[in-house]
Length: 403
Image (cartoon, rainbow, N blue to C red; front, top):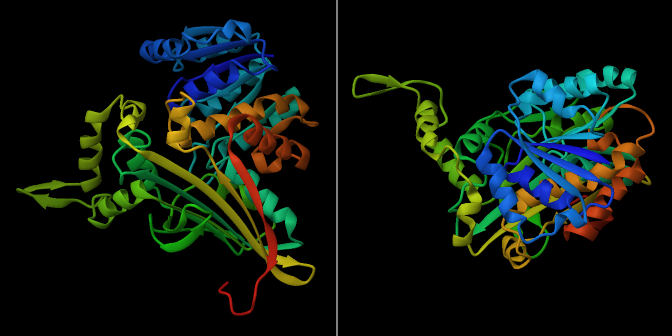
């Protein structure tokens, strides 16, 4: 299989390193517009004899030019889009013209997986696309679907994440601009057949994560999975909450009013607080968290998804958890990256081989894959990337327990 990887950022560089040892791939072409990123990935591979595994070629590519994208896509079997989701549709249309299958990590449009709008065109061309393959969305979609299949009838699905830094927060997980943009986006909750918009970082809940993490505060955040899961799981409600040291820091900024678009008067001038934040974030242009993680003792990531509903006539709860390698474990394996970036790349790397196994052409979010293919992805995450995914026994909810 000949694969074109677009984007060598925090996740894309990890995808590259994972795919060079993938025995389903014969050739890997890695592209980015930034020569420094290309050279950094090349340098990280200097002690790896990757030609023994996969032939790798690095090229500079300006993705703003549709004709250039189409020329690069021609002749490959699969395109992995690891660049900004704003380019999803442009790259997918390039794949349609070239007759190439497609993978990506996230949607661009708010509360709408815009990639699904091209499903009929992919069907017509006999092509396959798997979208939103990261941690959230991605792994969370697979876990939610598993929980729903354990029950006879689903009422509520809860998606919960936590990412803690030790010592307490010091490093931005992504660029400050992207972090502010993400957490200022109003969360959506699906309830009783419609989407509701909530306040960012509201709905505080203390959630019990698996050992050794324990109970953590979580808050509503925006997630692409909430836009697609109700299409494939019959349920009454689904929400996404996340917690951890970075979110607690960002929530402090939000509570101060710094995420507000409403102008305030400062020294006779009207200023929007969030514009000030974005202006301050500009000094972090080119920010790379990998340059700062060695100042941390650890970063711990956990994902838990649970579904409440009926099983055998009894109100029951099913739950599945994922514990990726911690930062300390990754560094011991000589992998200098964050658990979130590593895990997102692992989901993509675990999915690349199954795209040709899809029985029917079209565009699919992870939860729309059949049970066997979803199971294959989860198995590879555990076997090849040490992401511990484990199910808890389904249990009956006692009448004294809260809903």
